Length: 351
Ligand code: ATP
Ligand code: MG
Image (cartoon, rainbow, N blue to C red; front, top):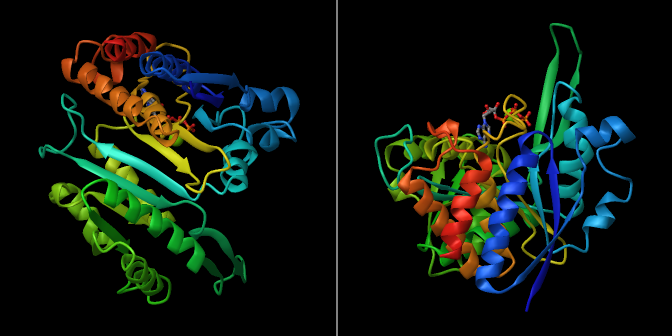
């Protein structure tokens, strides 16, 4: 029996609620499909910071390294600890240390969910570059406070960085419909985005079975709304991906459904799986948090671990519970608790 060892980081606020709920669903999938899922919990959070002066211990990264994956809830509690501290003390070091350069988010409108669009059949996988580009941090300001002040924010795109995100996206397109949309703004950004287009063309030669279409970011943003069925896998830079995934999350019904994977496809280090939402202090500990985004993120983790059948069954179970509509949290207009939704999905997996 394969045994997967998972590092659980519930984090703050509803992160704690949804990781507990999601983990119980993943356990049900493990029982049903006959593999082992061992979890060790790391209480690294803003409370940890307030007690120990750090979001995680100094050897935190080394302690995570042996795990097959990290399952994370949410990190941050702005009223107690500045976001800059919580982000730089936990999430960013994990992403950086394990070089989790892929941010993958499935945006699908599940049957039974009322999204803001009239269109049905929204199903897009967004692949966002997670380590460089517009968020490289390069730049600065001169003549500060004077009328001559200039602020420069430099995007940094490396051939290694662009090529590896595109290779991952092409592989995902091959796994799905064989269609890939590559997002740039090469009409206005004539260095970085023209470079991105060139690398896309080079990588495409290795994937003759994938049809790649280039879109400018403004045009594809509109297309998310007007003609999403024409899109399947979408690959974009850090900034463009950031914006497009917010549109995707909104169309799929909001934060209660938005799941994400932070991946290093090469393996050898743990990849990290987390719902897109934050700690939501307003509903923390009340049992009102929608666990579906965390459950979905857990399914992405199972898929990454090679438990593809269990992953598909988890998503299918979630879909059936959502479609029936009876067991829903308050954000979806229901009265069910976080735990009740998880129990319903787990029961559906057990069959
Ligand atoms: P953070 O600072 O960690 O991002 P936040 O206060 O911005 O936390 P978010 O989680 O980003 O909170 O979400 C904003 C609001 O959306 C929350 O305050 C909450 O009301 C709602 N929300 C977010 N996630 C969920 C969820 N899983 N279930 C129900 N409501 C949610
Ligand atoms: Mg937030």
